[in-house]
Length: 114
Length: 114
Image 1 (cartoon, rainbow over the protein chains, first blue to last red):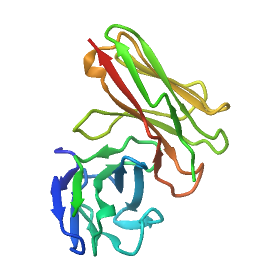
Image 2 (cartoon, chains in turn purple, cyan; image 1 turned 90 degrees about the horizontal axis):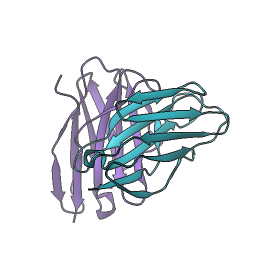
Image 3 (cartoon, rainbow over the protein chains, first blue to last red; image 1 turned 180 degrees about the vertical axis):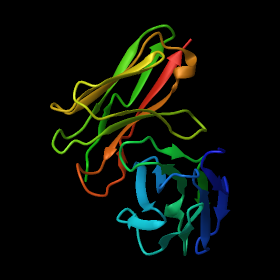
């Protein structure tokens, strides 16, 4: 398996623009997670899906953030409109289990909003 | 909100020396604890998942112990090598039960000096 695949690796956008981050989880993993990494707050869980269904989105910062998982092999995280404070590294991860299996992380998308 | 504390924040160790660092967490409602290794410019990789009080896991020169009653886990590295330089993260489900993904500590940044 190629692991968890994220695209793009880097994204630079202007404030106010829409940004879409993409993730392909490992086949057979029932759980998909979106995390955000910042210097101040470390790795924060934004949202996770179980069998394509969003279970907990309490970590999503505000209504400008939305995530979808239309099928078992694809998820998106969208920010609209983007703001400079959204600049961070966004990681997607997948796992067989919510708590008892290690999470496999993608390479991350480094987002810069100018 | 789950409080996962890791100490020290950073650590410089001479090549060949052994070292250890700590993850502290609330002892009530414990379910599982994860350790991850995060090398610079890469993504976090799962090392261990631990569930039982007194549990000890080992992978090569790296081992971990767990004390759920007092709420801590130690990660040990024996005979440090330059390739051990990384940030080591511990993580727990946000609550003992329910549908919660992992909350990560801020990590211990380990630098092995040749």
